[in-house]
Length: 247
Length: 342
Image 1 (cartoon, helix red, strand yellow):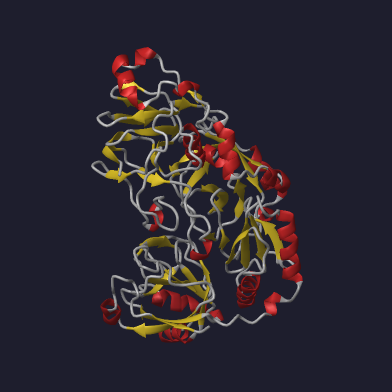
Image 2 (spheres, chains in turn red, yellow):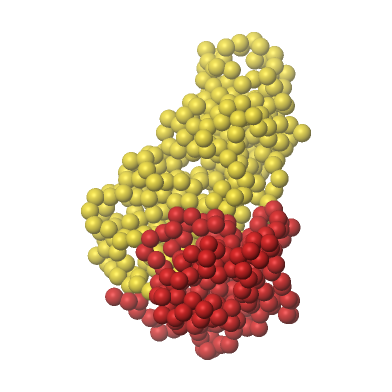
């Protein structure tokens, strides 16, 4: 049985101090747009007592201090705002920043590129062209500290996670599944397929700015060779990435 | 600055406090002590206005000394403890003097014991916390030979205290509040889950604890194609075919498996402290009931302070009573009668 879609945005509890607004149960570019637009519209406009407003791929979590704000009042307000317009039709808000990140695809850097291309039904060359040709957005940051979910890639990238976990992939691994890419800030286990690697580290505790990315940021991947990628390794974990502040 | 020296260290000692809430946008789970109640108990025993950073000791303690008179609270899972060879009650607060050796052995019940110096561990802060978050490489396990900076004890003359800890070291019932995916489980499955006797699996750490049971797994009917979404400490996620895992302090922040609900914060110490094989049950409570059970940190600490009482030690456990009282120049002699210590 597949997911039964709700008819509109759902307002749901998540923990004693959280209200979740869910726009869809399955990932889509419409849901991603709704989430980023709704989160942006909520920031700074929610009542005293809200602690943080965080986007995921399909929902926005608002955490609150129950000593200062009741769940019922917050949930009612969020339900009104969620129904006030068709957020699924909302265009993606303009990115605050544009990143350019060098990535080595295939080879030792991305040993599952060929496998992923075959599952996607396109050539490896085409896959890399689509990865570097798509205006990616940081849809959410999570799973582990600083890990960006980037998307959405063209529909042919709708390949499920592999059934078995890869026990450990190295920091900088770029992995793909369900029309998205993730970039691992540190060594990790994953069910996503490794298609490339970057010297860019989205999270590095020792760096003056430990977290480099924010939800909503735009990103372009730039193809480099494995040797070029290796030469970009630096203690700061920038890896040749550049960032242009748009707004 | 006062220092605490670790002469011997169990395999899983780390600095823990209440962690780093408020960084979900950065993918950071709050982390912090596995049994937060133990840190509140320590603050109550030491008469502190708030929780201070402590050493969390999983199953096995270590050997410790200080270079400055410092009160220490021992809370959480009871461990065999002795000061210069004389057994110590648990939980309790006590004064540790330079030259004395505090020995903390294995847990006699539960998993996580805590050693809290009254001045707190004063290692460098990151994002408002000193807690090690080992999964993401923040901090590291403590090792023998290390010496940790401590803050000053605000009241080294305060008397030794104890309290009756909330029972939580042998499993029990975990209350769950509904979450965004509770509705993916059909009524029969929800009923079966709540009627099942679980045991705490061997697979358990600061990220999550697996629950074992006899019988079929607990599938979520509507979970196929589900988008990855937020996951919290306390969430019970059904991995694979439907095997429950309770997410703990260092969990991931986004996950793709369906979640049954969220264990109430008040019951998290019970699952954190459940030893391997301990019996556990899951009980869903309505949202309104769960919300009504929410407590602020201040309320929690105030309630615990009321349970603190002076520790009367058996004189036979104190090897050199006269010497103890002479060193007791550190105390004012009227400690047990004073009412001004919060």
